[in-house]
Structure formats: structure tokens, C-alpha cells
Length: 345
Ligand code: BGC
Image (cartoon, rainbow, N blue to C red; front, side, top):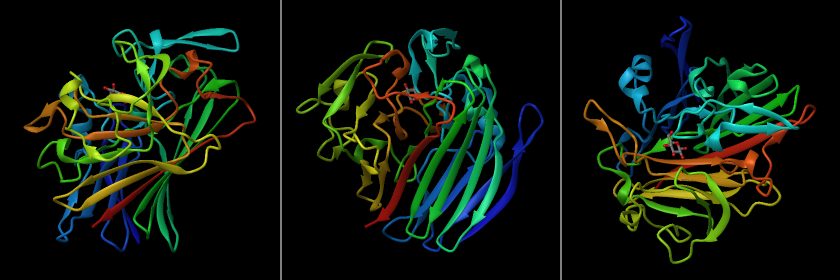
């Protein structure tokens, strides 16, 4: 187990960003930068022992800052917050006070706004233990940052274990009541990007979906998915029924998880390479996004080039009291955990 640190580049405001490579003895390497807490690469072997990157990302900081990338920004590998996914009309009301959030996705607020947690510099600390190597990232989002109430102190712990798991632990505390919903926006492509994700097999541990309006805000209705194109409760190829949906999949699946335990959320696998990733979480939902809007950049990436499995609370929860709450009060600690298990068969 070891960690390598190198300079990754410079942020627009002049701060230096670093790249940390966490390496385990089984040939898994996870690369993370403290700019946006972004996972830039996850390298693993296929069934023939060939190591490739199985997530969408760039090798240089400049590419993360390029106007072409930011123009159709797909949030490759980043941590999204303070509230990931959408808030309808950017309208947030906390304890009777209205806060108008930035509108950056049609009529809605998306992934924390203009400068979300994906675009800030986090304070890094490396950790080396006998059974894992880790990177802890901390950030203070001040009161009224992106117009959210409360000074919010956030920490993320990325741990790569000797059992080929990447564990992601998020914590946050606030000094005023606020909302928090954090996720990591990694897109997987388990054959190293050689083709799109249509032949990947996906299983989601849910038989339900939250129904969206045309701007991808939940209507409040929760529908059974059995015998519809949305049904992944038994593994099937991602591309099997995708033609029924003009923009592919982009929706939240509620997970049956009343005790907020670590449960199976999804498994993605790819036959030619024998690679799979299994997602466990204590969150009540998982957003599945097949990357319809991923831009093509220098002949790479593009539509359906990766699949994001975002463990989180449901979109627009602050405006849906019937959904699991995303409120965080002073004195409480927000705790969220997701484990990605990488295997090759
Ligand atoms: C959302 C998509 C969005 C993508 C990139 C996903 O979490 O559900 O609608 O296009 O993030 O921003």
C-alpha cells in the first residue's frame, strides 16, 4: 500500500492542486485531486491482467479547467454539494426563511450551484494504515456560500483497502440549520473507454423509481418499475431498453434502507474484461445517469461513454417533506458512506 503525491496544476485563483495516487497490493490505483475532491482515475486489471482506467477523467488539471469541458460540464469524478442533483427553481426554505439558489440547469439549481464543492480546493491529509491508504479532504463552506444557510464544515475520507474497496465517507457539521446532500459523480466505463456502456450489465437493488417532471424534478410519485424499461432489478445490459428513453437514463431509484445501514445498491459488470464494480451505501437512493450529455472532447468521451451511479438522498428533497430529510441541524453530524468494490472474474 502506498501513496504518491505530485503537483496537478494551478486553479484559476492561483492555488496549487495536488494529485494523490493511492495504490493497493492487488494492482488497483485510485487517483484523486484536492481540486473538487475529483477522482481522476481508477486503474484496475482485467481478466488477462491488463491494467486500464475504468472511469472518465483527465490526466491534467488544465483539461478540467478548459472552456470546452466547462461549457457542457459533466462533473467527471467530482464531489457534488452542498446539495447534489436538483432543487426545483432553486427555491429553498429552511425554518421559514427563503433562500434563492443559483439557477444553472434549465429552471433549476443543480449540484450546488455556480461554484459547488466540485470546483473548490480541499485541504488534504494522507493516511497510511496496514489495511488501507487514504486521503482526507476538508472544506469549510461559509454561511450564504451559494446562498445556502450556515457555516458547513465538510470532510471526505477516501480509503482504498487491501480488499479492493474504495470507501468514501462524508461528514458535515453546521452552525445553523441547512440542507446537505453529497455524492461522488464518477462515471464508469469498465472496458477502459473502448466502447460505450451499452454492453455493461447493470443491476439496481430497487424495484421503484421517483417519477420526474420534464425538468427532472420529482413529482413526488414513486412508481413500481417491474416490466418497464427502468427495471434493472435483475441484471440486464444498459443498452437493452435504452431506446425507449430519448435521453437515456437519468433518474433516482429509492433504496429499501430504513435503518440507514450499508446495503447493496447496484452492480455494474462488463463481460469482455471480466471487471465489475459493486456499490454499497447507507443512502436512501441512487441516481443512475447514462451520460447522454457528456461532451465529446478531442475525439474522446461523448454520449453514453460512461455511467454514473450517484448514491444520495432524492433530488429536490427540501421541497418534498415526504422524502427522507436532507436537513442538518446544529449539533448533528451528517454521515454518509459509499463503498465501491472492484472485482475481476
Ligand atoms: C444529473 C444529470 C446531469 C449530470 C451532469 C447527474 O447527476 O442527474 O441530469 O446531466 O449529473 O450534471
